[in-house]
Image 1 (cartoon, rainbow over the protein chains, first blue to last red):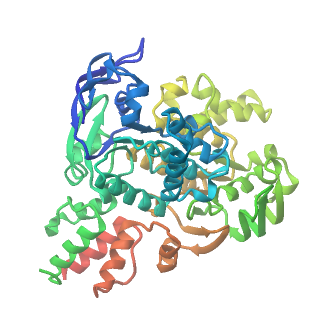
Image 2: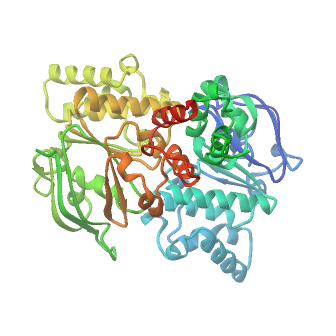
Image 3: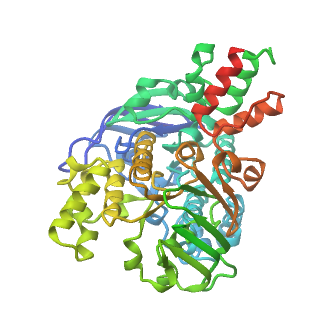
Length: 273
Length: 280
């Protein structure tokens, strides 16, 4: 469980980026943190693994105050995948990149190779195992960065903008993968601007604006709330926009994905009861 | 008269086992708004690099076929010469801005061309105005929001007065409202100034209403080329293209036996068709 209490954070000499955040993310939850550029999303998740410590207030990970722990210890449970893979990758081959943290955690070579092999397979990276991460495309490097964190099997996984630069099929794979992680009981927190991805995954959304939580609830509630969307510089998903346009026919703008819209339209036309 | 003409263009990076783009033949007229899309690794970025001469001038490899942009054969001109004809805008504006003020950033290109002070001034003012950031000109880039930074990056390219602008996923780092703003700016450059736009994008939901033409690439080749309505079909879906959600919705409804005059590619079109159907 990740909990924050009146969490405030300011970089030295600057005004507060986080201005008093109270939230609880339970084990096994799937959460999307959304909000405008500069809302404080990345800063917030950096407090979850101790990379940043609160200026005041508190962050607790599995009941331990992050001030009483260390990044090394917290990282074992909280895996953070950065938005820009180039801030994270440094090894000569993809295989080495993935093995690095496991070596640091002191695993034996057999375990390391087995785990690396499995994760390469899962993320469709096996064919690149001996390549340098830097010759791969942007989307592929992002998958390597994700693999490099998943390989040590953290309990809570945080992905900063995982869908940027990913094509449709990779997003589909990512969605299935998150569902799988969730099913294994892992907490998955994503930071994203991708309203279409969120409309299809239906996570709990935490809406951040100017360093404060301005909304917290199911995707269909928040992505249909015009006022909140405007504040957080978000738009309705395309299907939500279509349903909203046709609300005079009794459609609900909480239908935000293709399948709910299809059902609603068929019912309205008397094709379905 | 075409502004971009590629004839059997093929390029293989040094050390690569197969071509990144293969036998690409296209003809684009001045003033078109083209969306270029396709699965990751299909060759989109390689085409962008060819269009402004980074290939073959900076990237080594085997270049075959011909590419002529605004009357210039890219093989026979330097990237510096091509820069006044083709502007390139990247995903992340932070990588493109470097000065202490937006105005300096936008002036950098024209100054490098050796233009007079007055001409530089005129172009900077014009580019800032066309992208709607005149009031931000004295600010350093790091004080700007992501959307404002991307406008500044576009202004910097615009100040070179290119006839063609190539934008490689220019909105992917932006929040959705800023992304729509940037697309409106790009559309304006196309409609008001007649600049030919080549926009690389995966998210067809947000770009389709601006495009008069969509090219879909797969495995180094252009496999579909036409209006959004023409190309958003079964073949595109099978390649793994994420069609606009409204298009997918109508395809599902059609399978349920509903009939439509055509499959919409925008919310506007989808809403008006459904409205007609529901009012009957």
